[in-house]
Image (cartoon, rainbow, N blue to C red):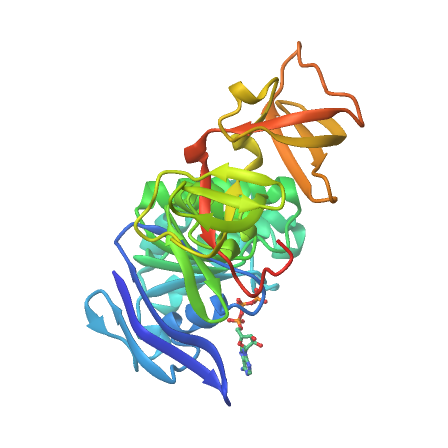
Length: 360
Ligand SMILES: Nc1ncnc2c1ncn2[C@@H]1O[C@H](COP(=O)(O)OP(=O)(O)OP(=O)(O)O)[C@@H](O)[C@H]1O
């Protein structure tokens, strides 16, 4: 549906987007995720035609769209500021794009009513935008976009201005619309939870390039880099030197067996072992700890409803977090006590070191 090739945008000598290749399939929900300044909006604005590329190619629906004006690309767009017209009613706001397209009056009436019903706001059709809540306004701007049935919708932080509860409701709403209407979505956010919750595929960006892309569970459980591991969720990191004969990692905290080898893993020299907090557990003795039973001191242990989180410290002060399922019979280790940490070998990930992560 969309294919960009070697897409580049520079500002002076600065590369806001650096030779990015990306394909999006029909009906796919793709999220561009990354820290501020990583190039997410630049990529979206290049696809929409609001920014001109310095180099590279954009194809939409099989046609070269690189130099096509925005309004000929057949895209819908939704942004953080809803840009509803204040003097028009909700109905008129939603009808506006259809009037611009000179659609017959009766069809406009039907389509607007249908879309308002779809987003469950048909009862506010006669109100003005300022008589609506922020969440309602954002749903209206969504309605205004889907009413003319674009096959592709681009969204740039559309929920950024909403509070947490409303954001979560709207995330479900957008997912539902995506599933019901079969629209191809490209969605920009810097919020990793939002990306994990909504996407078929996450494209993680870093300094104008794609760091890693894949299904949410791929990025979360099978990161290829420290940047990906760090950006999505929390992780426990142990840096050391690989001993390839013994297939172990020699660290300041002991020697740990490595997970089953992958073709793309760092095979010699320095590397980092990454284990997610929920892949670790407290174990009673070394024999029951495949991860070799790392010893730690308990700093705190808190119950967060369905799970309990242990904040631990290794000798020398390095912090570790272990998260276990909770339950009525959970017993928490005392502050200051010594515990052993275990993990299943293949729940650990061996990652290359990275100059941006010196303090691992
Ligand atoms: N018109 C411009 N002139 C100069 N630099 C720009 C311009 N537009 C963007 N940039 C730079 O390009 C880089 C990427 O910006 P972009 O807006 O794509 O980042 P982003 O990942 O969307 O970040 P955010 O989440 O903060 O919006 C930033 O360093 C930004 O300062």
